[in-house]
Image 1 (tube, helix red, strand yellow):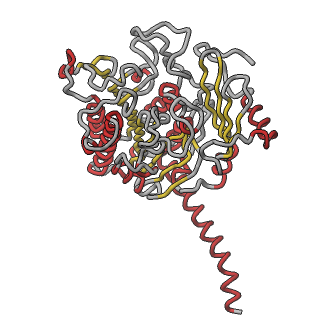
Image 2: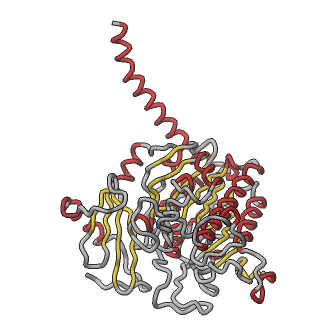
Image 3: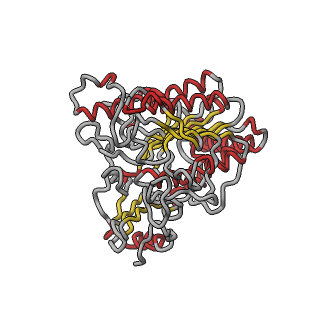
Amino acid sequence: MKGRNVELQRPMKQILNWFVAVLAVFHLANGIVLQAQGDIADRPNIVFIMADDLGYADLGCYGQEHIRTPHIDQMAREGLRFTQCYAGAVVCAPSRSVLMTGLHTGHTRVRGNRGKNTPPHDGQKGRIPLRLEDVTVAELLRDAGYRTGITGKWGLGEPGSTGLPNDQGFDEWLGYLNQDHAPDYFTDFLWHNKKKRLIPENADGQRQVYSHNLLTDFALEFIRENRSAPFFLYVPYCIPHAKLEVPDLGIYQDEDWPEDAKVCASMVTRMDRDVGRILDLLAELQIDEKTIVFFCSDNGSARGWPGIFDSCGPLRAKKGSLYDGGIRTPMIVRWPGKVPADETSSAVWYFADFLPTAAALAGVDAPGNVDGISIAEALFSKSPPGNLHQRLRERFLYWEVPRKGTLRQAVRHGNWKAVRSARNRPLELYDLSNDKGETMNVADLHPDLVETIDEYLSDCRTNSPHWPVPSR
């Protein structure tokens, strides 16, 4: 009889343990929000670091065997590593627009690197800027009492336009305004707020100062200056994008790789070093336990590096593609004492979720028209709590590429991924739960699901004068 009672108690004990765990997550998440709604000094600092063209598998903690990223790997051991997080778009400007506005590429202002029907700014034809009526995450946080800073590549406004960082919620800014300038790592100027900051050491073709170092210096100084007040720091680094350049090859000098592969690896490892410097400074200033740090990439790997780094891992395609190799990103979130350490989460979310998540962390309301949702509760456990878990499974994530009069589209819905290669093409359907590489189109086997997704696509976007797409 005693043995039977023990057996009966076991499932009850498991249920109680589960219940206690759920309550702990609930109270932690709600405690943070309630705390944020109180004294402004108690609100968490938010740091968002984003690489440029870093592939899903370019980090050691995501399976990379050749490029060394010890500091980001350590960040993963100290935080939560997401395996199904997505960027906002297939290329940089629209991805950044989604991140800043919380609107997906069917609604956000900037839907491609170049658009139509806008006057050139500073000689840059086709660069579409954010408008003053666009609400950014920086504006929300600044209005909530945060100091806001950005350093790196902006991509959402040229000189003389309405899209400059200082007009979109950032108090301080140093970096590049557009994608053409950003790969000039030995540039002779950067934009500091609304003025050019000259770099005389690089004038007349000299190559003395690597701009990435200046961006890191700015980030560190911004943290030092604002350590006593809540701050939001956005660090969209420019490497390892496009024009591969680095001051030295470091530990990769003698590797038996093509020269450009050595350069790319050196750029990633240099960035890793500087992520470590940011984390070390937070610890030195004793504010790491009140600072949540995100790390990710803006889209997939540009080169893919097949047979060398295999930067996209098991995912199909690379940057520019709506298959997962083009849009799935590494995402690590660290907040000592709040975010669980050395855990992995399969929660599905994307850049549009960052604005409402940051708003929730700061205890303010997000605009009612955003496409993203707050996934703050998913940050405090390796499994999202029940209601959020259900919501994440039921909702639709959306991406589009409007170009040359046609429209490519993609949807993630639960474990299903749908891709349309052109406006009037049939939907492809993939079951990502057992086909991560999107190799088997199973649309013919699931006509009802295809119809449901097609119905969603019929009204999930608005037309843009800058990226006109003819009706079906």
